[in-house]
Image (cartoon, rainbow, N blue to C red; front, side, top):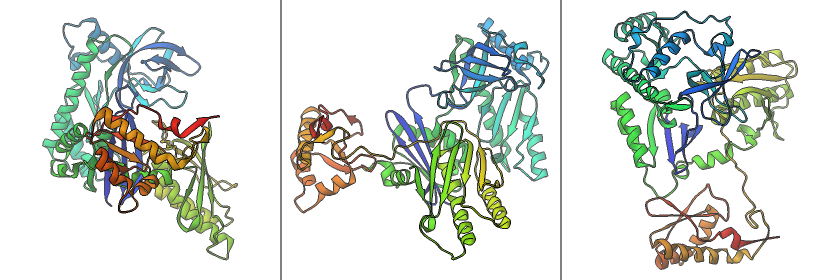
Length: 525
């Protein structure tokens, strides 16, 4: 299986697309220049409310919504962690050694949060679930530092090995190895990718994780409550850390600084594969070049087609995500039962793809085409379980109910991917009246002249593919005339609306229009 990662870096956000055999499988977006309360971020927060009925507390970590901390998320070593943090912030002249902190009694599962926290207390916490809709982040007080091969957990002494490493000899080797190289006062979870790794590589990563913890501690020592202590790697690095494998053939990035950052990280974890990280410098938008934009617009709408003419209707409600399976007007078999079974099996593949692509979490209810045969129902269930086994997110699949509904739960740690595939009316731009569309290219040329007067020649104009085709037609075309007269390069951009335009400088910086083209094309009622 060929895997590729395409990274589109813009001033406002970084968009990351993962493809497998040229099929878009995951889309991630990360805002730039602001705290997004990403999973893994560590904060020094303050307790705002204690909710005995929920056995939980609400903690201020700087988000507009207070973050949620359940008692079970305090962790067994909470009292030891709190003692260390208290000692750290009370004496800023030195950093206490973690292995010299007296171990406190562990928190039992039957305890009450009111016995450990009160309003006004300061606490070191980490985000486990990003803010979703009207809810704030979800937190844990059991701090961990995640690497490619290990997860480092301060204040515990356990060494745990991933259950996905099945060979007992390898499990024993890894456990013994980690016990011998880990510092006192730290626990370690050995991840699946550590299987068969050399001692030197594992030891080097463990040292780096300990160093990250020490940097976190030094930052905490001089921070006031309600502040960010440590920020998780960017989403791009995080994805590479978790899923990078020999199957990766290319990682395309359109920004020099992000390219260097990713290349440096890949050289650290897999030096032999550093050549797969490539800098994209083409004029065409990177998502258009690698067919990401088209797949997003066709695959992220309310209606999604799949093989043989079937389609899915996907709707989100407050409580759950519903998926309706339809065969359309096409009938492949004379027998209705066989026809329903065939379309349901095809739909299952696309449903699993959509769950991963949109990163849908929570409760998912699938309304399959009705089947009376119990063997067919069981075969569909087993097929769905097999397909979902490839999903990295924690999940659970239940058999079909007597109403033909399948219930799925899937771990949700961040908001689902939403892409607006609808476009504004290309004639009036949503304003009700238009001037003659025949003059649209004249208006574009006026804008070009204005931009050239302001920024000089060499600018780039992005147009919708239909408009691009129009200005490119003929031997003596508008695109050529504009190039000669104004020195402007016209580039098609699939992400734009029909009459939308964007101007960029030669170095890729978006330029602000002096006038709003839409105001010249349309008049308000």
